[in-house]
Image (cartoon, rainbow, N blue to C red; front, side, top):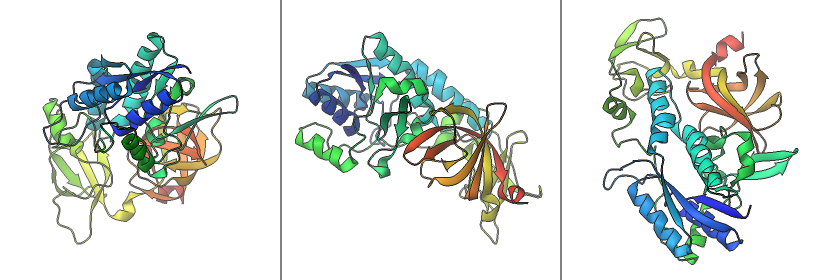
Amino acid sequence: MKKVAVAMSGGVDSAVAALLLKQSGHETVGVTMCLGVTPAEGGPVKCCGAREIEDAGSVCRALGIRHYVVDFAADLEAKVIEPFVAEYLRGRTPNPCVACNRSLKFGSLLSKALAWGFDGLATGHYAAIETGGGGYLLKRPKDRRKDQTYFLHAIPRETLAKVLFPLAGYTKDEVRGIAERAGLPVFDKRESQDVCFMPAEGHGAFLRSRGAGIEPGEIVNLEGRVLGRHPGIACYTIGQRGGLRLSSPAPLYVVAIDAARNRLVVGGKADLRAGGLVAGEVNRLVDAFPEEARAKIRYAHRAARCRISEESDGRLTVRFAEPQEAVAPGQSVVLYDGETVLGGGIIQEVLAWSLLKK
């Protein structure tokens, strides 16, 4: 690629991505998404707030490149926030960062860059793209601690040919060092935290502010006996222990969310063990899934050995070699073969370990 638009978040990673591309001879411009996000004063850094747009502009001026701001607030609402609210009300735990990457950064923003005549889009993600098998492959980066491939598994395979990840071969510490030596104004800026549109009060408060019908209901055990009350199922996720306000001789965890009856089902830690899952909305980044791979069921999860089978309806069944805790419908399962990201999907059903081992 010769002409590249760089998605500028106002942070150090995208700043260094732009610097590296300019130094390597690319014709580079910075583009920042305006999403209508207004973080609280003194609150955590967000990725697309007004302060971040200003910081992105400062970096572009320091680099001597043009900076554009594009209004994608309506896209955020329709493609990320509305599905986020709907999923929580169904008793699921969605991952809005996966949806944002798929639909906004590598959807709306990439399309805008191509329409402007650029050859592709670069971002400051810690991930890699390599050629192989007649196409492009999404790979894990050098910095394993910052590996963001989990959040990138849902971008369309054909998109990889139009994307650059300049930080693939660098660690976070190296990136900060490059920024400091180059005199970039954001070299020591804090990293963005949390979901960009989420208030400090959490997702329960956010859903209520959206007029979502969050109603109190029953907390029951696995036998259906009522143990207490909850303020709304959308305030909980699978594996959660805090906030139940129950008296019990042993710790209790949310093991299931029954949205149809507005119930939380609680049990012991052993009841969180899952033997597998069924995933829909599958995105394949390779020609075919192998029979065996490793699966991550959340970002901080250590990938677990599994067997994969593709069903006739397009869904995937993933069976773990060892039981995994707190598999949450709505989250993503991402499949790996060594360094290669095979693809993934959205968890729709959880398969109990006890049933699979009978």
